[in-house]
Length: 104
Image (cartoon, rainbow, N blue to C red):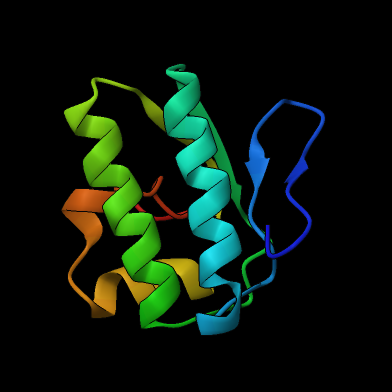
């Protein structure tokens, strides 16, 4: 989403591979637009290869704001890098990523 917001064929917002600090403003803008639309949001995070605290903060704020607005956020995929970052910062309950394949 950094500079080029994209949607996959299922209509989900497809996160970019690099969600480090340089991508945070564009990520924030894209997610704010999704909030403003007032509809459930589907996110595909399967392509995320690099994410830092800035990217995770944007996702956490979006998740918090979507919940406060009563909007459903559905994850259509999440990479290992995204899972690790969320876990390391203790954001699992807030961001609610889908379970990893093969993990109960």
